[in-house]
Image (cartoon, rainbow, N blue to C red; front, top):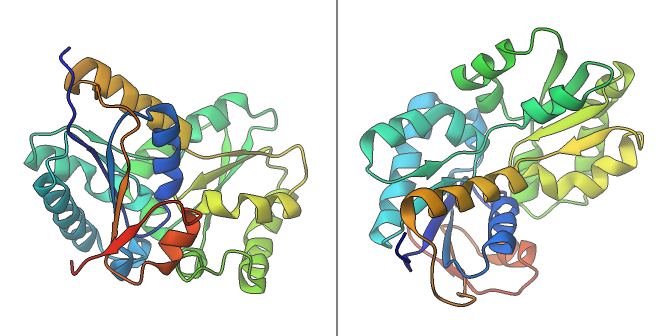
Length: 259
């Protein structure tokens, strides 16, 4: 496979997909990445399927103008509602992100797992097809109403988030889950808060590492790795860049664009 120095495009309905970007950047530091935060339209979880598809296509068009060689849909809601349409329309590899139910089901001792996700993900046809495969495991679904918006506002350690997390996680703990699946790319930023609420034996699973490995596989098999060294990532947002800059620990410039 020849080398390919075009960038990897990554988009999300806001800043949450940076949890996926971090995993990709860590595994593939020589790859140039372009991250697009569509924070103006966050959260996607409350929107209709057609709205999510339209926004996902708009994000894709933007990244294709930047000459990206593959696109990571770093948003569970966009993946579960729009990735089939994206793959049908565009001649470029797409990597989606789905709740990591399979590893949770595989390793669960109690055969009871919890999943915290957006309404758009839990209501999607793709998600329901996935859960239908695991009839022997009790899957407790919980919509994380309000969490994405608080994270987008930079209120990760706020009392409001703590209160919401207690109300969402307590019924799962009482039901004896031993795995908690985070079904939204924003939610890994809440792991320190979640760990204060759930017992130590409950394992938390998110999709970052799996998506990074799949990205590496697609580069190896189809697209080509970059031959550059330690390319500087690029970040775009269509709202005030303050929160995105903070979540990146002020390490990278973020450009605000009209989009």
